[in-house]
Length: 115
Length: 110
Image 1 (spheres, helix red, strand yellow):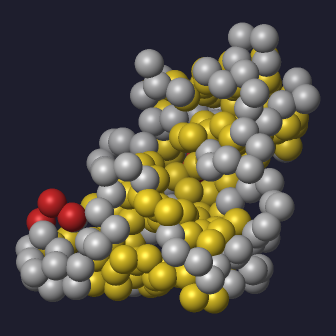
Image 2 (cartoon, helix red, strand yellow):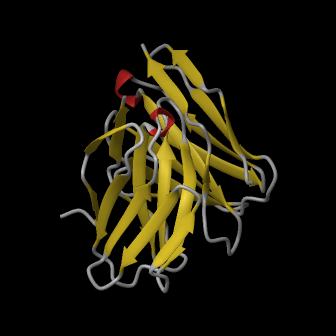
């Protein structure tokens, strides 16, 4: 089946630093990748959608200068949380979908803790 | 109200059947999904159903769709402790991005 990986699985950083999270589709070409944020006991909040080779489309209320998304290849998308603050602490999950596919496949998530 | 609604908790005894319910508002939804999330992990696609189907069965899982009432259910037969997780219902219209419910925490006790 389709496998999506994320790296790192968890990260702790100091306030003010930047953190990069990678999302890779291992056995298929992901023309579209999605980045979600999940708060405890809550559903997934879509942050942005990225199509390979083009700029990401951000959801309302998500700061594009704070959450930088790059989808440079058909197998890799990155989310960079710039100048992280404690309120950015969360579980970030990516998912990937191939063009015309019915479903999207999720990565295992990255737990970010900002001290 | 929310576009996709689920009850937040369900508790069942091991060996019994679990039924997780979901309602959605968009009558033009074309795909409906069930995902499972175990603690500290991402979402695992369990099954999905096209809107022109009424039922789909896959081993212990049975999905029922009542399109008239916009109601989707997931039945897990012979529920095991390993089934304890959060189950998300999601709906998608065409090429649009799926909308997820808030998830139902399934607790299986001996």
